[in-house]
Length: 422
Image (cartoon, rainbow, N blue to C red; front, side, top):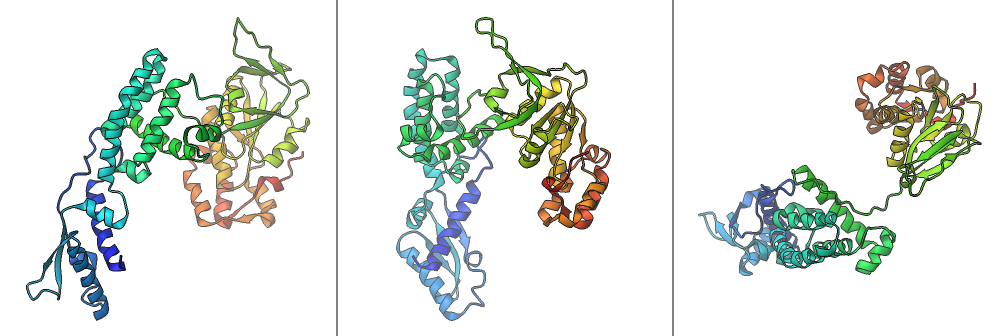
């Protein structure tokens, strides 16, 4: 295929995709895959034709005529003579152009996916007869895809093979009581003999699930396994009480020595409430952005805080769950982080999760100026983050002046260089 043949084919495919495109999977989405005549003006394909060199003009016209001889296009010439100047190029079968280019026609691929799902879903419905009602969400999910899939899914990577692999995943889900028992990569090998394939399918499925929910489909409780293991660390003399179960009561976890303890999300979610061993009326928690500073302050007992919580930058699910437990237990929040836009936004995020005031520690203009000689430069993208800092956050004492100094200097101070003693 010559460069000009590719250019012409790409122009038609682009027009086809643009005219049939819908922003997302939706009950009102436009049906795709139907053959229709597409006519393009030659000037839209090669706008610089008139000023081009003779050899370029010849190559372009030769390419158009070659595609016509293959039965892919029909050409309409200017009246002044065949072989001189093309007026329009017309395609009556876009599928042939896709075949010529080695690409898949989204419309045709969508129809193949729908036919496959219509064939597979009845067998999966029979499997549901002796399964929990919650498994019905898997069928609702596939039925939605069968009914409303369009070329938007193809652009996301949902071709026929991916849809078949998704059905295999749903079949496994219906047969099993839960996803637990295998790592994501082990499950991928079991299902696809490929340790990476499941990650690709889960990404496609997760995107589709969010689109389905956004488009008003009955709420789906369906969730997919993730290769994500959010965790946090907390230190302090704290008592952790677990959800009460009369049949299997769990004794509380008492951190009598105030050690640094690690908590994955699954463990945090099992905690019913927490409290200080001293039963302090107004306990204080210091949330800390970076690991090195957390280990220094978390292992110290003379900083004046009842516990320290490691946020690892922006709070993940485990950090957020622990923040909510601390807020429910009546803790007063303080935060130590980087003196840059992201550091302030992390404080703002913690405030939103806790739904309580958060007092910054050593996050002000005076500390910034003290460590300015050791600051790092911030690029324009980093500085633009200040636009996300809300007025209510800027109103916290010290932060408005800190933001001003950051913008004036285009510098940021990393938390690890700050002396928190005294």
